[in-house]
Amino acid sequence: MKNNRREFIKKGSILAALSLVGMNSNKVNMLVDAGSKDFSTAFGPKKVPVEPYIKIALQTSTEPSENEIKFIQQLGINYVVLWTDASKSSAEYYSSRKKLYEAAGIKVFGFGNSSVHNQDVLVLNLPGRDAKVEEYKNHLRSLGKAGIGYTTYAHMGNGIWSSARELTRGGASARAYDQEKGATGGWDGKKYEEPLSHGRKYTLDEIWANYEYFIKQAAAVAEEQNVHIGIHPDDPPIHELAGIPRIFSSFDGYKRALEIADSPNVGMCLCVGCWLEGGKLMGKNVIDTIHYFGKKKKIFKVHFRNVNQPLPHFVETFVDDGYADMYKILQALKDVDFNGVIIADHIPSTTIPQTGTAFSIGYMKGLVERVIAEG
Image (cartoon, rainbow, N blue to C red; front, side, top):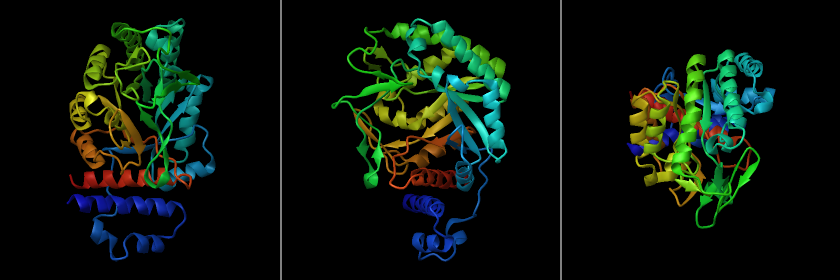
């Protein structure tokens, strides 16, 4: 059964990728399944409706070219997630991007702003915190005015940490983290290093107090504007890096954080990859986490990615090539009636541009359609 399912998914992914690089359908059919003459018999109904169930979105450009729009349409994607920074953070700009994509039949599910995301000023209560809180609240107000109902937020005081890139399947270049070799952090043009990224060691109580100060204000505006905030896990999910505790590195951390927020508009951007990076350090596995928070309607968006193994050393892989069974993860999302979006994330760099994205989306579509078809 497992082999049959994997074969189904693999063929769907290859079909999507090969078609997008210009191979005609006859050649694709011969290459993918020379022994099968009737795809409808082999794989069941050609199209399974996916809404209002799990939706697939592409994280893409706010200033797309005509070819980029066509690429999204060719992938069969109906949703996008966008990011900008303070230079373009306004209701007018958010609304203009929404109209641009809607003209192509594509919906903007969410809009992030890197200038109010992963900000040490907020996490560590540095000078200028209140101004940054106001900036974040204005971001939420702009989203509400533009009619965009979701944004991702991360609460890391010293950014995302990585080691030198490593190779994954077929020699593709991928992000890695190796505790033994050492790593550096970075975000928004800033670089962070061991032993103390900010000159001193912060306490866990400080980080929790700073989070509460921020989230109480943000949640009130989010509810007022009908915008949902999905909090992204720490990456990597290590409980302390360079003197800074990281509170979104475990199941218990999320449970406490969402209880503090006490808002229907504050939940999770569940990065499956981060949860897999943490492994046993997370306290609960990703399936149990989905069941717990999903039943509470606290999962708004999912980063659908895989890694080769958990900490202390991991390499990000193609979605089908890591240690997690992504099919079971989608089954769990369906079990809790998840109706947000899943996105391909941190895709390894392939030799031919965009084929990694095409492969990932094709694989995800095959999984989603199969999970829904199975009831």
